[in-house]
Image (cartoon, rainbow, N blue to C red; front, side):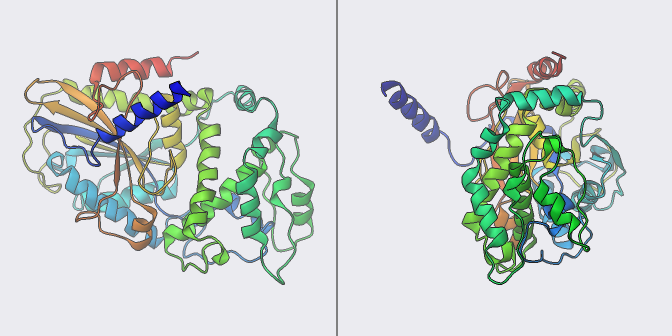
Length: 428
């Protein structure tokens, strides 16, 4: 108990000495920034509806095909674009100062276009779709072993750890008087080599819904529950009426509970060290090399910025349009965590981003890297709140283990950051 009390005191003191919003030294100038962003609000995909096998009532209608950005999602991303344009105005010295890459997926490409339509409206930037959404050459057997090893090779224990939110989810899906009878999604089991009989039978007896075949090694009750939670998150952030969010059975507090299950599940799976290294390694190297290249170049004084001005000064803003998994993989690889104002630890809501700023100190002439997690609140997305006035998104400074210095800046030297990324991505 004395140890626990001392630890709590230290944590309290650390919290008290950190103001809500950090202010940089007047000698600090942002030289460059890398933004790795999740795509915006989209229509749910099949894994988030499960062919309507487990829900007693129909899913709500959406304005676009599954997986595509919605018009509301595009508008919410433009709010983030306005925020970035304001925050990084000194970096925007012409069309040549911005570079954009994306995974080769329509929703990430469309997300990049939405943000760039505000950051650089006159530039007609070319988006390079060469980021990978999932590691193509990963050893699947090794990955299965790595994940199973984290579960003590007892998948049912993993499911038991989520028993309460899984029960809540089952109630949301089925608590409907007079509606159709549906199987319990919690019968999904892990690593048996087959999908559950209830799901297969439900698909076989329904002429209107086909059951998509999936990798049985990744199918379990928690995965299914996490997917349904994501569906409800999308409904809420899309701005659907509250009586349509989870059929009126998912108020905001319950959404937070269900999304905690979603985030914990993805953290557990995607932050598996082998998975994170294989999946995030190339992107981490890209970030490190780009930062090192910019830092090694001339430090061009920047006073004002206008994105449609003649190009000059080289690239200073790199925007990588990706997925929530990419953010979680990077978090696992770099051993970093974050929290935003209205969600659980390590949440990755639509449009959120890991941000790495290259900062030059004019007094010491030193360049350092500072990391942040930036995200709109769910209500800011839902209500399309402007982020350039009194309201801002959550801006969470991140401590990078083995690299960051002291609070409040958590500054990390460029050379140490490069060394740390090399160490993290070295094959083991």
